[in-house]
Each structure stands twice: as structure tokens, then as C-alpha cells.
Image (tube, rainbow, N blue to C red; front, top):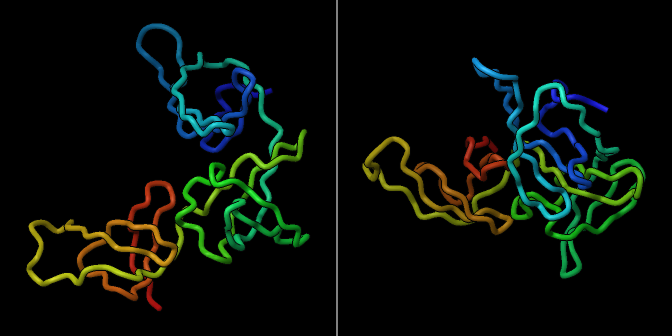
Length: 189
């Protein structure tokens, strides 16, 4: 058992009989009345995000979850295949359990959350950012900016398309934020 004081992003809880993860939370202490916690919870079974408010100090059931390190291997019509880093056991996960499958590159290290009671995978967590090569983007022209934040589309080696600054060219390697698919920086080769 835990209370709302134990809330943190990524915490797995049982709410209304399902397992949720806390996407974000905010403790609110109004001038009048009792304190409360505003949360965004993601259902691990269907992926829906709901907003909920808990009174401060309410007891919450924690889910019995274990995060295990895996390496992405490949995907096919049956799903996405990962290998455990220590035991070399391979598992297959459906596309729906992965936050952003378009960012998966062969050899990428991820964490898969397992329900310990049933030993079944619940979700695949990507690292905070990934490094990918730009396979195609239009060339940027000097003086082609109306502001300093001008962006253009770029296709990455995984097939995903993201917006990048005008100075990025085909063949450049960039870091991409896995939460919002935003360009972070260019990586030196």
C-alpha cells in the first residue's frame, strides 16, 4: 500500500481493477479545503490516458511490476521480437504495447514491464531519446527562414518522419525525443 505522497511519474498502480502508470501528477493545495493530487493515468491494457483527482493521503494499491532489460531484434506480421540481455530468451510483443514502434532500431535497449503475478508483458518502455540517421530530407537553403525555429520534414532510417531544423541534411545522425518525437540535437559521427 502507498499513499498519494508516494506518487511519481512511471509508478504502476491498481485503479478500478486495472493496472495504470502515472504519466504526470500535480499536488494542489488550495487556499480553502483539503489538498488533492491531479493525475494523468495510462491504462496498460488499452493504452487510454485518463485524468483523475485523488484526495491527499488516500491509500493506493501498487501493482506488482518488474522492469526487465531487453534488446530489440526485429519485427514481422506476428509482432516485435526482443531478447533478454542476460538469459537470451526471446519474446514477441504486439505493436500496441510499444509507445512508439517507429523509433525501434535493431539493437536498441528497452525495458519491458512484466506483471509478476501472471508473468505477462504489459508495456515496452523506450529510452528517453534515440539516435537515428536521416535517410532523406530536402536540402535547406540559406536565407530560407522566416524565424530561427524553421523546421522541415525528415525521414529517418526506421521509416519515421520527424520535423528537423533547416541545417540538417541527408546522412546526418540526430537524437530524437521518444516522448514527443521532437528533434533534440545533431550527433557527431
